[in-house]
Image (cartoon, rainbow, N blue to C red; front, side, top):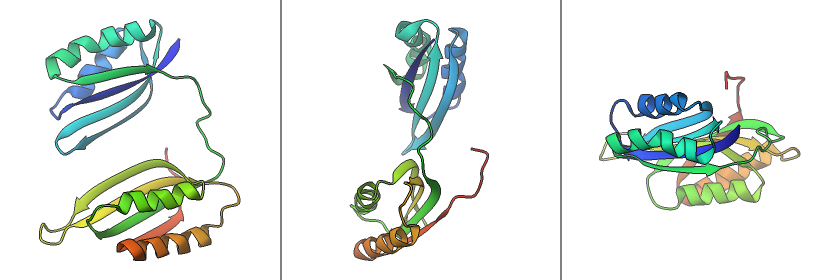
Length: 175
C-alpha cells in the first residue's frame, strides 16, 4: 500500500466526514490519521490514507463526494517518517487582545528554540466589544531545552505583543 495525505475544504455542512471517509473505505483505503475543523464556516480536513490503488484510487474515491458537496480536494503521496519527535510534550496557552502578529511572534520564538508545534488552535473568544485572542499549542521541547528559560522568553515576547503566556508539561493523554 502507498500512503497519501488528502486535503479537503468546503463550506461546512452535515455529512462531509461520512461522505469522504465512506468513499475512501469503499475504494479499499485505510485511514491512518485525521484532523478536521471548522474555520469561518468552512470545513477543513486532512487525512493520512493508505491506498492499495495508488493516487488514482484515492482521487477516484473523492470524485463523488467532492462533486456532490462542492469540496476542493488534493492528494499528495507521502513517505513514512518517524512520527515521534524526541523531546518532552508541553502545552502552551496564549491569551490577549486580538491584533496582527501574535501567532508570528510566538511561533518565531518557538522555532528559534527548536520547539516543534504539533497542534495549534486559535479562536477569538469573549464579548464582541472586548474580543480576546486565544491560542492553544501542543509542542515538543527538544532534549536539553530548559523549560524555565523558554517560559521566561515567552513571557518577554508576550509582554511585547500584549498577551499572557502559560507553558506546562502535558499530562498523559489518550493521544
